[in-house]
Amino acid sequence: MAIDQPASDALDATFLALADPTRRAILARLARGEASVTELGAPFAMSQPAISKHLKVLERANLISVGQDAQRRPRRIEARLLAEASAWLERYRDMWEASFERLDTLLQELQRSARNSRRPSKHRKLTKRNRTP
Amino acid sequence: MPMAIDKAQVSQPSDREVKVTRSFKAPRALVYKAYTEPALVRKWLLGPPGWTMPVCEMDVRVGGSYRWRWRSDKDGKEFGFAGTFREVQPPSKLVHTETYDPGTVSYAYPGEPALVTVTFDEADGVTTLTSLIDFGSKQACDAAVKTGMTDGMEMSYQLLDRLLADKAV
Image (cartoon, rainbow over all chains, first blue to last red; front, side):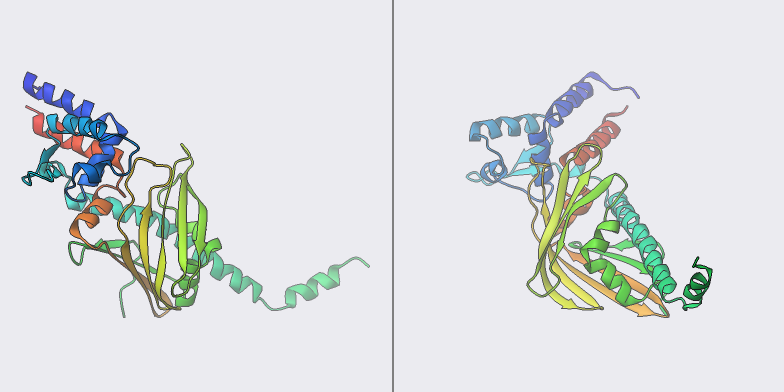
């Protein structure tokens, strides 16, 4: 896979943008819808200029863009970068199936031990007979 | 007679909802019990391998709340869900809110509450569990399903994959 220089620079910008947990969290939030700088900064113990610095890094990497509203200036994620829905549903299903397989096993165990505890007292009689005096 | 669904099926009835269905060879009352008793819930509601459930509190009655917390064996990170029961009709139906709790994944944003409707239907000794999750908006649904519960790291890998595919010559 050959990559030309401008594309290589773009990848560097992306790696830099993603190499920070605050910026990753901002992207995850924007995946749920656009937000203003104030909204994005809310969960962090960070100054406004510090958040704005992070946003500039993300903008330079073309991972987010600025909306039209001149006052609010909402940030939004570049939609073309989100993954296809079907692959995600598959993973979501696999996660549930992992839990359900365990539930299956548990239900069988619970039914088995319920059947065992209902077994007739023939077993107890045999034990009494074999008990040493 | 409904067909037994022995592997989880997931669908999207609308762009803000996800439906999960699965059948079990057990009476409805037992499946409901396994779903609502904390000592049983923490044995199976664990997702993929490598997680334990250090917190599983459930007050299953209308207005009662629950709290679930999972912990990674690998790095000790924790996250969870919490909410309140809106409807409780044993052994056939539960309705509860569900809010994501980012826990020690401290830089993640808390989520908006989803509404979960769980129904248990029995026929010929087979119980079908249906869970309908209404995330409230397309965006919240996309975030929860597409980005693996708002995990910023996971999303970043997907972005990189796409970019590498776009930039390849």
